[in-house]
Image 1: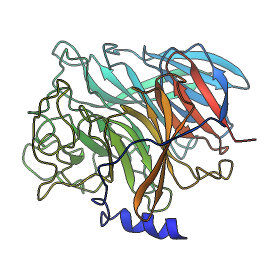
Image 2: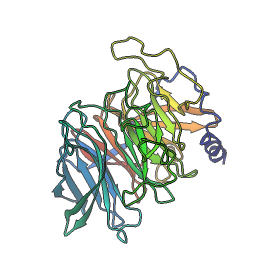
Image 3: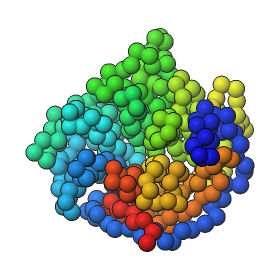
Length: 370
């Protein structure tokens, strides 16, 4: 009960500034093993679960795969994928009322638009006869750019049926994240048909991007729904230092690049501000950066020592991180699956097992301790 009360309070931000400077990781847990389920996808960027236990998986290169009964089938290729740098086919989310609403949603770096290069797009499609069909583009950020960085992008449905999408600031930190008339560096909220809710915070503001739900983000590549509060939580890449976990609130500004706990990659400072009125503080920040990608809350009884906590992948250090949380914040960080490879995605399945997408390895199932 202690953790449940704490998380409810924390979701409203009362304790979000209590972090100390010591964020070093202290422990490695070597007791977790894994099985490789899919080994023919070089970069498994996203995945989601059907009720029958099968799994849909995206490959950054643009292919979509279906894992069922131990077999993996290529079920199609998404068109107009801008596969450059960090761009490509990104996340996938099955409609929560599937198959009554038989839609599957994808984010991708897309070449559609007038300019060269690409920008993040939201599409939906159907799965018919084990092939992707009926592709519809629901939203496309603009303008395209040939920069190969900071596309985002994760998807999550909340309990009210809204679809949330994260988008990176496309390497234009001085232009996009603080400007609500521009795409990039935002969290968006949609209806499931791609239309924009009229109660979005900037819907009636002149020239604003109406899909914006929050802004001031850098490059969010982890997102999940808190299992008790129903809040959307994200993590996002900082620069050198300053990766963050944030609890998303309607209309709020999360500060990038005006405030940050990080510095430039060359060691120079770009801001001396870590807080400012009107800008939300992170729930947690990493120093040094781990380059986080993929995030899930653990609710399963299959992993008693992880239950109630957060798992996040590390691209930079190639492990899965367990962030243990209590009434004082993040009280412990533990490496799991150390040196497995660049962890791109992590999610708890409907069967209670933890699944992880690892670059160069594939899609794996993490086994409970024996």
